[in-house]
Length: 100
Image (cartoon, rainbow, N blue to C red):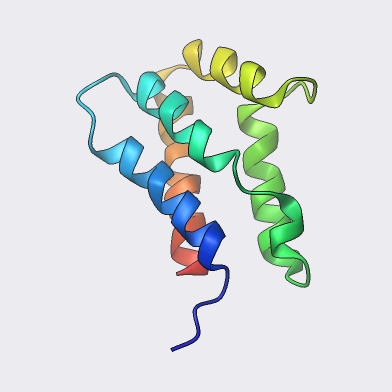
C-alpha cells in the first residue's frame, strides 16, 4: 500500500494526538498541535490544489501575521475563544482525514 504524504500525515497525526490526549484547555492543546502542524509546508501538497487551499486556510486562521509564524500562532491560540479553537481543531482533524 502506497501512502501519499507520509511525512505530512505523521506530522498532522501528531497534531491530532496533541489535541486529543491532554487534559489542558483547548487553547493549550492547540498551541501544542501547532508545533507539529508547522512542520508541514505548503509545498508538500504540490499538485493537489484542494489540499493546498485547505492547509493555507488553516495556516491563515492560526497565524494571521506571517512574520514569525510559530510565535504568532502561539499568541493567536492563547487568546482564542473555546469556539474558535474548536473550529481550528476540527479543521486539523479534517485535514488528517483528507490525507489518510
